[in-house]
Image (cartoon, rainbow, N blue to C red; front, side, top):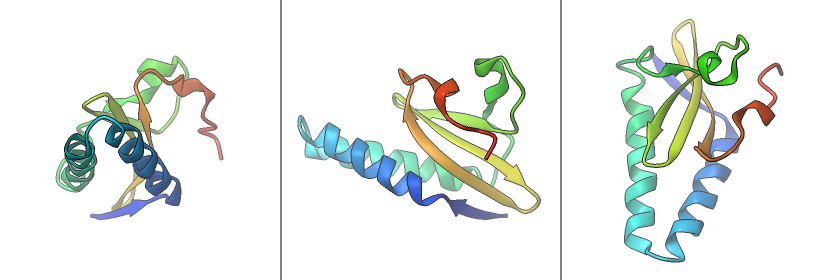
Length: 100
């Protein structure tokens, strides 16, 4: 398995880090590190995430895992885990275009 990360994810992680760093630089580093470690674990357990279809109530190929208050959105394709977004759980996931 190989991990492929959409460029949007790097922007998401930077926003998360900057937001949390307003209160605690140490906590912001901890959260981002935990998110990155969770992405790496997906290479070993790619089907471990919840099906996003259950949360959205329409069929999509995506799954998600939760780290702190953030959802790592990904899908598995052949020999790859493709991470597309990292979102705060308060966000409306149905607003994302999953059909591109």
